[in-house]
Image 1 (cartoon, rainbow, N blue to C red):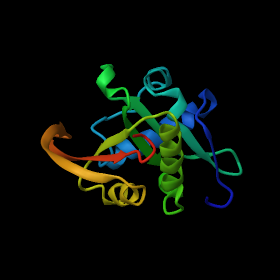
Image 2: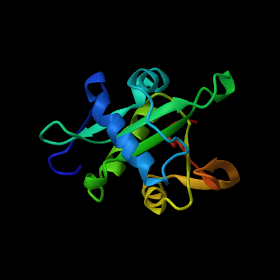
Image 3: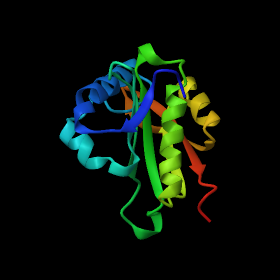
Image 4: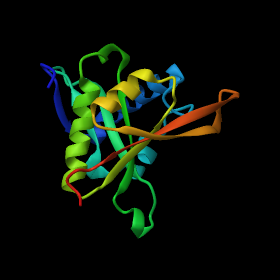
Length: 166
């Protein structure tokens, strides 16, 4: 773990910092199709409470976060979730993203979740490298899946299958 950084469960007192980091990622243009961060109420009600973490520095500043949502309410997909991980631009390069992903994967393995997936813009090479280090693989390209700032964007679908769930 990065020196001076601790991971903890995401709680309401982290809301403003989490949403600020989310908006910073949105503003960079290669993190999501979203254009603005949601309200905390929406964010909180849609993310799985057992699978969201923040990285905090020695001054209690949130440096990054990871959270997940169910892929479907159909029972066949009960063990499949989609995640997001964001690190504050000033905190990148300190292995915070990897620590957050590792915490998420440990919690999902224990919970019996067999697939953790996400969609990443091909241009987001840092995120692709991070996910490769964490054991994810690219399973396909969703070509021209959506318009973003007036242009069509591809999304790489990535997944990590749990070695703990048989």
